[in-house]
Length: 534
Ligand code: GLC
Image (cartoon, rainbow, N blue to C red; front, top):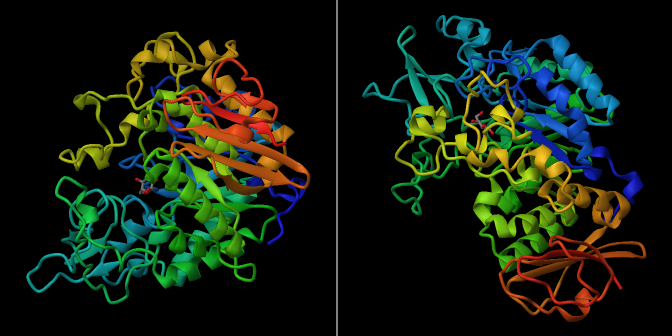
């Protein structure tokens, strides 16, 4: 495929997606939980980062058992976050600032409080019965098969009123919708239209690879690689609950709904290897999601050789599939990347995210170097952690803590008198936006320098990618080229000084370390450097 010129790229190819976890961004109402008015007040900050779009994790009506990923009404805002009018104001302010707005669309399951499920559970004769997945008990009265919930235990809950079980791949309070039912598909298509009419530019689609399950409800085989101590869900190979052919059909339909409107996009949450991942983009004739989330920078060990090998194969596979690449370092389900790679490597990681070919998604707070926050046991709230307290790291609270705005009470997230829903980091008085704003050497300003470079050098956005030989196992180098322009990225994954010869001979555009190195200078430990190619 010939590469499109930077000017021909769509917004979702050209720009950076910035994920906001609404509970944790800014509390304007003073109840300890973030809200829409809070987000709107902080949009100028978001725009100052040089990102293209904000993605808001779910803001719809919800009993919040999974903090909004359990939707009770897809077409209303939860009162905790505000009103539809507040949302209108948020969209207007975002668009005024040149930011796109993306919502989190949760199609696989509703809340058990959703009117559809309330109706369905009235009995086998309910007109909405088939909107969910019901099965008779096994002969012994137990669940119909061995399928497991991501959050531990069976994926089936018994409903005594009708004597049947219903399916839930997450909490019992998150019953799976039956996507085989055309009425469900039509209702869920209308949800997309509802929000697009309100100016929403795109959607992140929750667990899109789980939409359909095996029609024969066969047991899943054991995973021979599973070890005790890992989550129970991983003890099975999910050949009958994930990545089913029908799911691809449903996604093609969703894409047609998006294409009824101009310039909208969707990015799908899909944890699969490249060969199963890229088909989710579809083909030019039958497109599916615009971006199938690529989580491999999170899943791979932090190792230059392995990351290079992956980047090479992924880039080539995207090219062959005529799919636009994308990269992610963190989200609300994964440990903060700075905690994972270490503070020394944090800018190497940030540089990688923002210079590889493809759309980057950045998680709120990563730009100031937020880390996992240890949560005292009495303040844990994530059901995934509470239900699997025997599995280290199963809980997601540490990466969902309030944004650190300033050195004042509650780090400026909420009024002083309030207890935020999750504790603030101990170092919030030091690691915060205000402290970093005025410091040219801060993480925040490094992030801004990277986004500014992307604007100044279209090769970093639309250019070709090719990895380069460095002669060192702990240095990853690549070039981005567009026409005559060539930009070289050098990443030292280790703590040793590394000479890279000719590769470092161009003019340095940016270094992650304070002093600008002279042309040809070896890479310093943990240095990320971006140069003009010779
Ligand atoms: C996705 C979300 C996660 C949620 C789950 C169930 O993985 O990212 O936060 O718990 O789906 O909706």
